[in-house]
Amino acid sequence: MSWVLSLDNAILDAIQRLRCPLLDWFMPLYSRLGDHGMVCIALAALLLLFPKTRRAGEAMALALVLCLFSGNLFLKPIVARVRPYEANQFVGLLVPPLGDFSFPSGHTFSCVAAAFVLFHYHKKAGIAAWLAAALMAFSRLYLYVHYPTDILGGLLLGVVAGFLACRLTERARRSRRLNSLSARRLLIPNRPNAAPKRRRSNRGAGKTIRFRQRRRRL
Image (cartoon, rainbow, N blue to C red; front, top):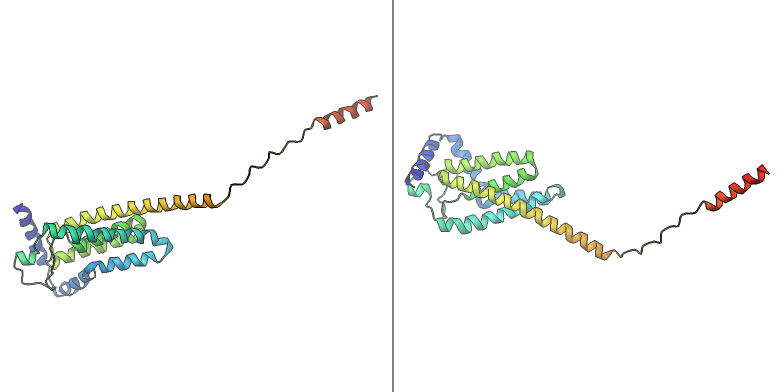
């Protein structure tokens, strides 16, 4: 897979040609928002506060938990890919050296998962979240701390985590509704069936009218 690594390095080198003082100042600050999933955790907590967005908050929190266990605690140690600035001995690093491995990109993973969930429940806000996630992914390439394939892996895994979180949240909510409905039925006693009302017969009235008509004729 040497051609993949060559393509990764070529893309990173091309992005480094965009370096300028403004981006050198902005990209580290923006990328820091994704450290430890801070911005995504804060967004999930904010969504949980309001009833209209609570469902999205629950799904986003679950997606971030999936990102933590599958990405940081499972895939990173197993793949154990060295960071590009270490492999290529890059000297223009704008952030402190990182202590974990490179694949997948945790920043991209969490931001994409959060954007997927938000777009699933709230389309307009989700579009802004997707743009923010794309900028976060680009910042990791600009800072030379991830290969493009790390970003691609984080993107795909984030979509999967967001999809699973939405499905699991909807299923859990349906089960809670069914449980609450069954509990209400058990608490409310069954009312005895009321005896059916008898319809009044018009036969007697009909006989009376006929009798009166005969008397008038006589």
